[in-house]
Figure 1 (spheres, rainbow, N blue to C red):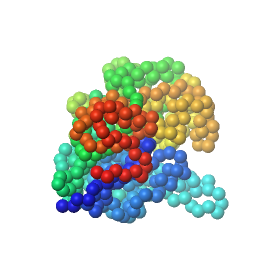
Figure 2: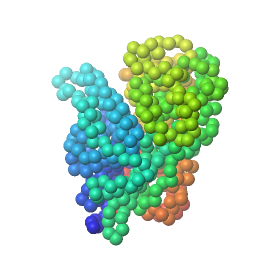
Figure 3: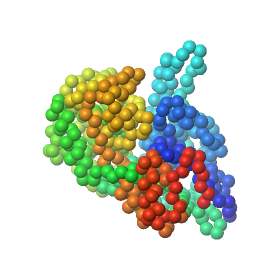
Figure 4: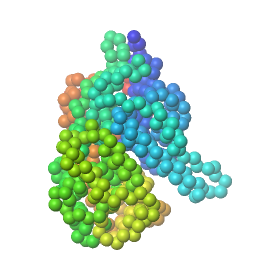
Length: 467
């Protein structure tokens, strides 16, 4: 039995919320926990995503917590640079990753084409980070594993996926590493969801482990209660519609869009909101909603029962899914009250930028922010209510109302994180907090120490822990 101490190096989502990637080395093998895209300033993001701090060909396997692009989005580049091992995840994560990565490749190709048109004479051509062909090769490496069972990986490790309640197919990862005199264990929370949110099952208890790697996105902030979300959304919609304005909702096409559509469907179904035109301007969201319906095993009991009586809870009869560019332009030209839900969630790309550019100078309109906005993104500048913001190389006045409803976040807040983690005091030797900015991770770290955890830290990028 090998006895060398396992190590974990934190290469992504360290002191930030994006680009999740952690390298586990044990018994001569190398595993990656997630391989996400880093999102931020264009030049920095390009450099960080292109260059791995290790040899991709030396990685033996990837364990993927879920299909959000900041967790899976750099897998095709890993494969492009030599990785050829298995990618383990749940069945729903595999199916959603196929949709997400194909869309990401399309964006990479379109961005490269745009930059090449703008490049100064004599500069080399910009290459996409990866292509749709790379995605096809990547998907061949995916191996789906069921929840709750301990699965053997290459006869060297065991892995168990436990419900994380964050996204369809999302999982906490419990990793068991053979060692003498006893196995070593690591739990990676991935992104932890919230209890009581519609559609998905609640997160399970966090598995005990020698090392716990926990997200900390909202480690210092409380959300509004789940029971208040419908009322909060109703007030924003009615206030905007009564002004004769448009409600623009930047939303991640995967997860957040389906949740908002569900809430709007229930408000109209219950007679609390008059029917109105709702556009989901995202081909990706349409494809993702189809995948959702293929995996009812991931739904909570209430949603499963609702589907039996009303198969339209994801809005096929309520929502107009906008697929073509011309249809999207027509929505932009509309001069009547409506709701427009479009990607991307941080307003950094996609069709939401066109809707914002054409609508945020009108004070009758509202921009509703329903998720975390990373620093240096357009979404963060809107949340900060800057007088002007740059969209497509043009400065636009921000006259529209800006409303933030963090309760729609699919991340656990400070109180929920405490409830998940506090019971592990005395059962976990070390905690490392990732996927959080300093102002959120620092108070969570202090509270964990107060609960009796002796070794709690917030690692820098490239920092290593030896078990």
